[in-house]
Amino acid sequence: MGHVNFDNLVKISKNGVGRGLPRLTKLDSTKCKSCQFGKQKRVHLKSKEFTASRPLELVHADVCGSTRKQIPRRERYFIVLVDFTRATWIMFMK
Image 1: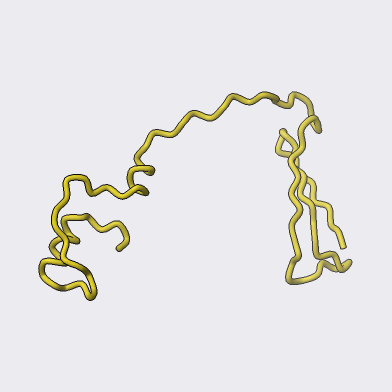
Image 2: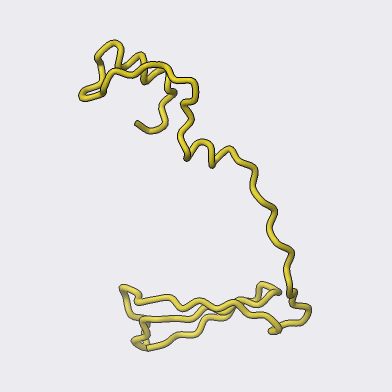
């Protein structure tokens, strides 16, 4: 029902407006698990074990593809490399 307020669901079932909706009565605890989870405080992230201090000391890589259109030299895949300085390289693969 898209997380409608439970009081509104009770009114809808009482008036018979909802098709196939059973008769509902007001409950003491009417929070769904998703709502409870969304309202919980988040746990702090762990501290970093390793931090890069020089260029190319830590590089993140991602392989992407297959692309719909070929690049002029017929490559369909590419690798994206990102350094901690945010320098980015793209390398194409066939």
